[in-house]
Image 1 (cartoon, rainbow, N blue to C red):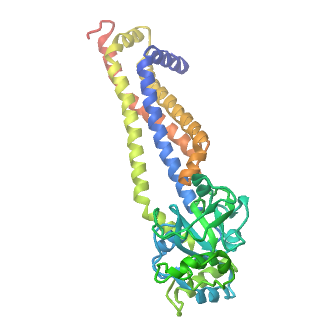
Image 2: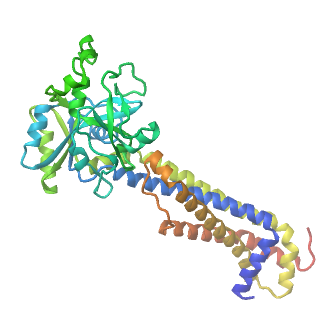
Image 3: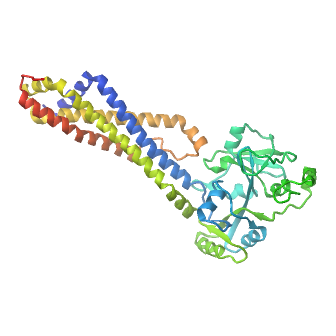
Length: 423
């Protein structure tokens, strides 16, 4: 019997037991789908995470941990320990090794989405992915004191359009008891999706942040603050006293390390300056325990699938003793018996793996926009790559090796049985 004949016989044998074979293929497909999906999502999440901010050389804030600074200034998670004075911002902006500075002020929200007070330079200098700039799906950057620009997710979930009126709330919670409802804002721009926290942000000018808090004392509105009107506030000089953080671009990448060192030893007030790429790597390392746990669980799923193939073949051996004896009587050698059962195991694994990958990438094609919108994962693979091919090869070879166990048992039985089957 030649190799092709053995393979053909293996396919016919599986077809004769098609119910069991189909169930085994489905279990392998599910195992491979889960394993590759977890790896794909993990890599996609990590890539999207690392590409959240690009071309910003240094992030500056009040003295705290580097991870905390990146969390609240870039990912809008957590709260700052303190603010940075406006005088410090102006001094940093005037340095010769600084090309640009974008101030950020946090502390307000709109229906659970954070409000970011900044300047129009934010939309010019903030970049993500591979130096990709922000773009407007509709409208333009704020020009009036009470203009607001929305991230793509904010506009979609709250069903806002250009010229919609919104009011901001004091504090970062989803529910606030102190609203700036006497000073409504007008939506003048909606950003295109980025797959970053920008999609979940509401942008206003720094002057707007000052305006809505004009007359407040210790974070609480006074009766006089309710008397402010938009026209009156537009005529005032609304220079901030402080900002939450700053995105800084150096005149050259070489100077960014020296800039970071100088700002970390700044004498006028305690500052924390971090290089985004370094801080993001540290932050991802903190989450590496979850990453390894997911990989371990999905690996066990593959192992369970392979054991399912072994169990399927082993449970059918008693029913196939006459088949093996007949094959031996027709001249099949021991290597052909072994090859038959090993081929069956390999075929089940290969077909199941291929089916799992086909289903996975079909689903990703359909649901990729949802994953990008809901979970900000925009770096998913949509075609099988080297890793996926490696998984198919590994599963197929592993199944073939496991197939040796029932193959050797069947060979031993066929030699002792002859044509007289004792069941």
